[in-house]
Image (cartoon, rainbow, N blue to C red; front, top):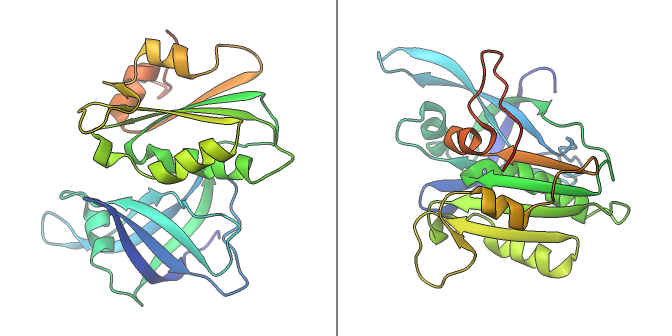
Length: 238
Protein backbone atom coordinates (compact mmCIF):
# COMPACT_ATOMS: atom_id res chain seq x y z
CA UNK A 1 0.00 0.00 0.00
CA UNK A 2 2.06 2.91 -1.27
CA UNK A 3 -0.98 5.17 -1.12
CA UNK A 4 -3.17 5.93 1.87
CA UNK A 5 -6.05 3.45 2.23
CA UNK A 6 -9.10 3.77 4.51
CA UNK A 7 -9.78 0.73 6.69
CA UNK A 8 -13.05 0.28 8.60
CA UNK A 9 -13.04 -0.52 12.32
CA UNK A 10 -14.84 -3.81 12.89
CA UNK A 11 -14.15 -4.63 16.56
CA UNK A 12 -12.41 -3.22 19.62
CA UNK A 13 -11.28 -5.31 22.59
CA UNK A 14 -9.63 -4.25 25.83
CA UNK A 15 -6.67 -6.50 26.76
CA UNK A 16 -5.14 -4.44 29.60
CA UNK A 17 -6.09 -1.38 31.62
CA UNK A 18 -4.66 0.95 28.97
CA UNK A 19 -4.26 -1.31 25.95
CA UNK A 20 -6.75 -2.38 23.29
CA UNK A 21 -6.82 -4.47 20.13
CA UNK A 22 -8.52 -2.80 17.18
CA UNK A 23 -9.73 -5.07 14.38
CA UNK A 24 -9.98 -3.55 10.90
CA UNK A 25 -11.94 -5.00 8.02
CA UNK A 26 -10.52 -6.43 4.80
CA UNK A 27 -12.34 -8.02 1.88
CA UNK A 28 -13.44 -11.55 2.90
CA UNK A 29 -10.77 -13.27 0.78
CA UNK A 30 -8.07 -10.65 1.28
CA UNK A 31 -5.22 -10.92 3.79
CA UNK A 32 -2.89 -8.16 4.93
CA UNK A 33 0.03 -10.17 3.60
CA UNK A 34 2.85 -8.08 5.02
CA UNK A 35 6.16 -9.65 6.10
CA UNK A 36 6.98 -10.20 9.79
CA UNK A 37 8.79 -7.48 11.74
CA UNK A 38 7.01 -4.66 9.94
CA UNK A 39 4.53 -1.92 10.78
CA UNK A 40 1.88 0.25 9.19
CA UNK A 41 1.75 4.04 9.23
CA UNK A 42 -1.53 5.49 10.48
CA UNK A 43 -2.67 9.03 9.66
CA UNK A 44 -5.48 11.00 11.26
CA UNK A 45 -6.61 14.55 11.92
CA UNK A 46 -6.38 15.65 15.56
CA UNK A 47 -6.73 18.82 17.60
CA UNK A 48 -3.29 19.87 18.84
CA UNK A 49 -2.35 21.58 22.11
CA UNK A 50 -3.00 24.98 20.51
CA UNK A 51 -6.54 23.97 19.64
CA UNK A 52 -5.80 23.74 15.94
CA UNK A 53 -6.53 20.81 13.66
CA UNK A 54 -3.57 19.04 12.11
CA UNK A 55 -2.82 15.70 10.49
CA UNK A 56 -0.35 13.49 12.31
CA UNK A 57 0.99 10.01 11.63
CA UNK A 58 2.16 7.22 13.91
CA UNK A 59 3.47 3.68 13.41
CA UNK A 60 1.53 0.64 14.65
CA UNK A 61 2.27 -3.08 14.39
CA UNK A 62 -0.38 -5.60 13.26
CA UNK A 63 -0.44 -8.57 15.66
CA UNK A 64 -2.93 -10.97 14.04
CA UNK A 65 -1.87 -13.83 11.77
CA UNK A 66 -0.62 -11.90 8.74
CA UNK A 67 -2.21 -14.54 6.48
CA UNK A 68 -5.66 -14.25 8.09
CA UNK A 69 -8.39 -13.38 5.59
CA UNK A 70 -10.99 -10.66 6.08
CA UNK A 71 -9.38 -8.65 8.88
CA UNK A 72 -6.22 -7.56 10.68
CA UNK A 73 -5.62 -6.59 14.31
CA UNK A 74 -3.55 -3.72 15.69
CA UNK A 75 -2.50 -3.43 19.34
CA UNK A 76 -2.53 0.15 20.66
CA UNK A 77 -1.62 1.51 24.07
CA UNK A 78 -3.96 4.39 24.94
CA UNK A 79 -1.86 7.13 26.53
CA UNK A 80 -3.34 10.24 28.20
CA UNK A 81 -0.95 12.47 26.24
CA UNK A 82 -1.08 10.41 23.06
CA UNK A 83 -2.93 12.46 20.44
CA UNK A 84 -3.15 9.58 17.98
CA UNK A 85 -4.01 6.84 20.47
CA UNK A 86 -6.72 9.06 22.00
CA UNK A 87 -8.06 9.76 18.51
CA UNK A 88 -8.22 6.03 17.71
CA UNK A 89 -9.79 5.23 21.09
CA UNK A 90 -12.71 7.52 20.17
CA UNK A 91 -13.46 5.64 16.93
CA UNK A 92 -16.88 4.03 16.69
CA UNK A 93 -17.44 0.71 14.95
CA UNK A 94 -17.83 1.47 11.26
CA UNK A 95 -15.50 4.48 11.37
CA UNK A 96 -12.43 4.39 9.14
CA UNK A 97 -8.75 5.15 9.57
CA UNK A 98 -6.10 5.95 6.96
CA UNK A 99 -3.10 3.62 6.73
CA UNK A 100 -0.28 2.75 4.40
CA UNK A 101 2.74 0.46 4.42
CA UNK A 102 4.28 -1.81 5.33
CA UNK A 103 7.57 -0.48 6.64
CA UNK A 104 9.82 -3.52 7.08
CA UNK A 105 12.23 -3.37 10.03
CA UNK A 106 14.01 -6.70 9.36
CA UNK A 107 14.33 -8.67 6.15
CA UNK A 108 13.66 -12.04 7.77
CA UNK A 109 14.43 -15.20 5.82
CA UNK A 110 13.50 -18.72 6.89
CA UNK A 111 16.35 -20.36 8.85
CA UNK A 112 18.57 -17.30 8.38
CA UNK A 113 19.98 -18.01 11.86
CA UNK A 114 19.96 -21.13 14.02
CA UNK A 115 18.89 -19.25 17.15
CA UNK A 116 17.13 -15.91 17.68
CA UNK A 117 17.23 -14.13 21.02
CA UNK A 118 14.38 -11.66 21.47
CA UNK A 119 14.27 -8.96 24.15
CA UNK A 120 10.93 -7.17 24.41
CA UNK A 121 9.43 -4.63 26.75
CA UNK A 122 5.79 -3.58 27.06
CA UNK A 123 4.13 -3.28 23.60
CA UNK A 124 7.48 -3.92 21.94
CA UNK A 125 6.20 -7.50 22.04
CA UNK A 126 4.20 -6.74 18.88
CA UNK A 127 7.17 -7.03 16.50
CA UNK A 128 8.34 -10.16 18.31
CA UNK A 129 4.89 -11.74 18.16
CA UNK A 130 4.82 -11.24 14.39
CA UNK A 131 8.16 -13.04 14.08
CA UNK A 132 7.30 -15.81 16.55
CA UNK A 133 4.01 -16.51 14.78
CA UNK A 134 5.73 -16.65 11.39
CA UNK A 135 8.40 -19.08 12.58
CA UNK A 136 6.15 -21.36 14.62
CA UNK A 137 3.53 -21.63 11.87
CA UNK A 138 6.09 -22.64 9.24
CA UNK A 139 7.07 -26.34 9.43
CA UNK A 140 10.11 -25.60 7.25
CA UNK A 141 11.50 -23.05 9.73
CA UNK A 142 13.65 -24.78 12.37
CA UNK A 143 14.88 -21.62 14.06
CA UNK A 144 15.26 -21.78 17.84
CA UNK A 145 13.63 -18.75 19.46
CA UNK A 146 14.21 -17.50 23.02
CA UNK A 147 12.16 -14.54 24.29
CA UNK A 148 13.00 -12.39 27.32
CA UNK A 149 9.97 -10.19 28.04
CA UNK A 150 9.98 -7.29 30.53
CA UNK A 151 6.87 -5.60 31.94
CA UNK A 152 5.96 -3.28 34.78
CA UNK A 153 3.82 -5.86 36.62
CA UNK A 154 2.31 -9.32 36.03
CA UNK A 155 -0.97 -7.65 35.00
CA UNK A 156 0.85 -5.79 32.21
CA UNK A 157 2.14 -8.94 30.47
CA UNK A 158 0.45 -8.96 27.08
CA UNK A 159 -0.37 -12.22 25.28
CA UNK A 160 0.97 -14.34 28.16
CA UNK A 161 -1.53 -17.13 27.58
CA UNK A 162 -0.70 -17.24 23.88
CA UNK A 163 3.04 -17.17 24.49
CA UNK A 164 2.78 -19.92 27.11
CA UNK A 165 0.76 -22.12 24.76
CA UNK A 166 3.27 -21.60 21.95
CA UNK A 167 6.10 -22.49 24.31
CA UNK A 168 4.32 -25.67 25.42
CA UNK A 169 3.50 -26.80 21.90
CA UNK A 170 6.76 -25.83 20.17
CA UNK A 171 10.03 -27.16 21.64
CA UNK A 172 11.98 -24.58 19.62
CA UNK A 173 10.36 -21.66 21.49
CA UNK A 174 11.23 -20.63 25.06
CA UNK A 175 9.90 -17.62 26.95
CA UNK A 176 11.20 -15.97 30.13
CA UNK A 177 9.26 -13.19 31.88
CA UNK A 178 10.54 -10.50 34.21
CA UNK A 179 8.48 -7.85 36.01
CA UNK A 180 9.62 -4.69 37.75
CA UNK A 181 6.86 -4.76 40.36
CA UNK A 182 6.22 -8.28 41.62
CA UNK A 183 2.72 -9.36 42.57
CA UNK A 184 0.78 -12.55 43.12
CA UNK A 185 2.39 -15.85 42.25
CA UNK A 186 6.03 -15.44 41.24
CA UNK A 187 6.70 -16.51 37.67
CA UNK A 188 10.02 -15.71 36.04
CA UNK A 189 12.37 -12.97 37.16
CA UNK A 190 12.01 -9.66 38.94
CA UNK A 191 13.51 -6.35 37.90
CA UNK A 192 14.67 -4.80 34.67
CA UNK A 193 16.30 -6.94 32.01
CA UNK A 194 19.85 -7.55 33.27
CA UNK A 195 23.09 -9.00 31.92
CA UNK A 196 22.50 -12.09 34.06
CA UNK A 197 19.00 -12.60 32.61
CA UNK A 198 20.33 -12.19 29.07
CA UNK A 199 23.10 -14.72 29.77
CA UNK A 200 20.66 -17.29 31.20
CA UNK A 201 17.69 -16.84 28.85
CA UNK A 202 19.19 -16.00 25.46
CA UNK A 203 21.66 -17.62 23.06
CA UNK A 204 25.31 -16.74 23.52
CA UNK A 205 27.14 -14.70 20.86
CA UNK A 206 27.79 -16.62 17.66
CA UNK A 207 27.66 -16.19 13.90
CA UNK A 208 24.62 -18.48 14.06
CA UNK A 209 22.65 -16.26 16.46
CA UNK A 210 20.88 -12.91 16.22
CA UNK A 211 19.61 -10.75 19.09
CA UNK A 212 16.65 -8.43 18.46
CA UNK A 213 15.43 -5.76 20.89
CA UNK A 214 12.08 -3.96 20.83
CA UNK A 215 10.51 -1.81 23.50
CA UNK A 216 10.43 1.61 25.17
CA UNK A 217 13.46 3.91 24.71
CA UNK A 218 14.66 3.31 28.29
CA UNK A 219 14.80 -0.45 27.70
CA UNK A 220 16.69 0.06 24.43
CA UNK A 221 19.19 2.35 26.18
CA UNK A 222 19.74 -0.09 29.06
CA UNK A 223 20.23 -3.09 26.80
CA UNK A 224 21.92 -1.58 23.73
CA UNK A 225 23.37 1.67 25.05
CA UNK A 226 22.35 5.19 24.14
CA UNK A 227 22.28 6.14 20.49
CA UNK A 228 25.26 7.95 19.04
CA UNK A 229 25.05 11.03 16.83
CA UNK A 230 24.31 8.78 13.84
CA UNK A 231 21.26 7.41 15.74
CA UNK A 232 22.68 3.91 16.17
CA UNK A 233 22.71 1.99 19.45
CA UNK A 234 25.57 -0.23 20.54
CA UNK A 235 25.75 -4.00 20.42
CA UNK A 236 24.02 -6.11 23.04
CA UNK A 237 26.70 -7.18 25.52
CA UNK A 238 27.15 -8.35 29.07
